[in-house]
Length: 211
Length: 211
DNA sequence: TTTTTATCGAACACAATGTCCGCTATTAAA
DNA sequence: TTTAATAGCGGACATTGTGTTCGATAAAAA
Image (cartoon, rainbow over all chains, first blue to last red):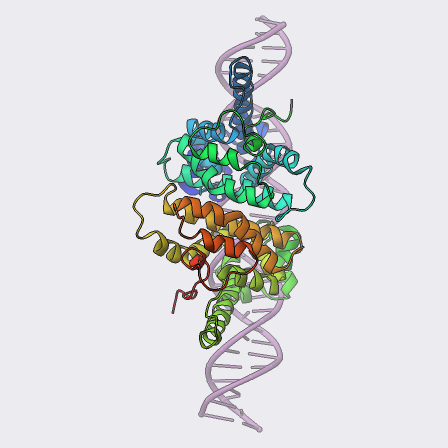
């Protein structure tokens, strides 16, 4: 991870990793097929950690008064908590391989609730897959910016900015007017109770897909 | 370009290029330092072509009744016109190098008018640099999607979708309310006359920076 | 004590990069 | 038309990086 931030993922050679980790060449290849697999496995650890924490959080909230979990906020919190690692994974110096992986993963997270939301509508100003692609790209680009600039704002502020930028547009894109209240409530700082349909795009109860 | 679409930029070797172009090894290195420089030079040709066309378009419009040029629409038109090349440059199979270059270029195009727009405002819900980063990433991601999916919609429709998705959010991000009319006018399909301030973000008269 | 397991380092084949040099067309100048 | 300059060709080469193999060594498990 340090090497990624130092010289960029693509430029790293296996020898660099060997020297830094003080490990023999054959030892490395006994564990990983190549550079990519090493990075992927590191990310997998973080991903399962995140999903376990979300599951725990969801369980604790289910008994409480507010059972909702804001996925985007939790993502910012999680990446901020492990910012040194995620800066390597999703930052400027990261590689294409892992960014594509992240894009797919986030799409899997955001697409189901979005699809559910537009299921009943017939014609949309913007097709769903475009909107989904847009949402994931935006989230990823905001995260990258945040991590690369040493997180100048708290996760909560980033979540707020993400919503401010994307929500009105998505609302227009899915041709919703019923959910106007959700956005207004959200903009006020906290959106509890009442308006669900649109806001629930990220207030998801099924955040852990492979389970 | 064909090789990029076939096997992805990163995987291409200089030998592949030599074989496909039926060119000697030393000939290649007499003209370009490496793979990157070859792609960059190809893109430079397209970029200057675009800027020249924009200049011509601007000159012809200046005499007419509507002197405005919609940069985003022109970008979609231009990339659509050379879609085979741009699919290699900005598509799924493209490399990180050129995408970063594109990002910088588009930022140079969109940042000045955006900065001009928020010059007078004191505090913003979302900082300008975040909004700029967001806008460029969104535009780039929509273009990539469009090219990779064989351009299922005309450039005009893509421009419309881009606006539908981003404009309301940007409006909220720069704390504008005066420009509400601009967005409404735009949403109607065509926004001529009247509302300028916000809409002019992309209706730019200084589209060719290096001049 | 014996066996299993993990690591090490050296060596190797292979692929790709970028450079060098001498040969040969083609083209432009003398 | 002859001559000189230019551009391209292709083979050879040093270098760097990749991924594999093998025998030796040390520590942990049986």
